[in-house]
Image 1 (cartoon, rainbow, N blue to C red):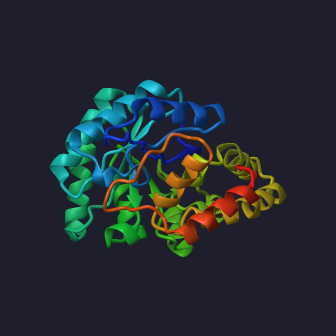
Image 2 (image 1 turned 30 degrees about the vertical axis):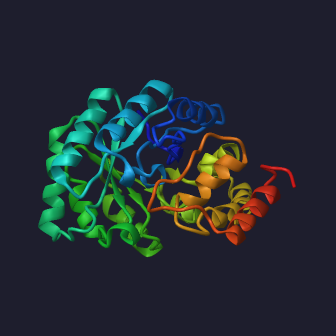
Image 3 (image 1 turned 180 degrees about the vertical axis):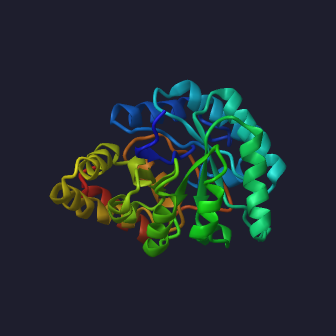
Length: 293
């Protein structure tokens, strides 16, 4: 299995009675695969994993594995190490190709606690593990030296970097370039510079609604076509900004509904966009040619 290219962080559609919309989820996965994505991430932040019950979390991973013909990188992280182990074991048993593990949030573990947390999960399964570094969500930054130390754990094969700090990301790649370890962008806006530094792709939000163009963009980078990569970067930039006009996944889930994909409601405490931001989002979709005026 090769992890590279465009890997959408999937939205989770819900039915009116607040259950998982399995049919809609499967249709969305099919749509993305038909437009060339290289993998999928169910149960990430974009999928509203924070409001899923444990059994729902497992259900989504099962459906994703059953629906996909591309690698499935299951979000199985938690600030509860035992729960993360349970979810990661389930993902492995279900046939997921890898697990994506967010840094423990809220607890604020020290360095030894972080190492012990990821080490316990990695030793409990035999599928590859990818770290997820996003201080804005967790309150903790995995510094480059810590990531390099975690990279020595055999089953930890990479990091999804969403720190927003290009100097840090460059340092991570520098420290791990002689290891069997990948860095993948966790920020659509920084995919071009991260991949230019040596990143292998992006776990993408915008790819949910513009998969073909996002794939073309990343392919241009991988094929060493900088002029085309820059052109597509700037074409996508307004749409990427619109995806973060409010807290993710509020805009992307709203946009999915606007272009005809399964989306359903947002689960509290997330709430619908205000009318002004919704109009800005709609205008961005019109400008991108995804919906009519």
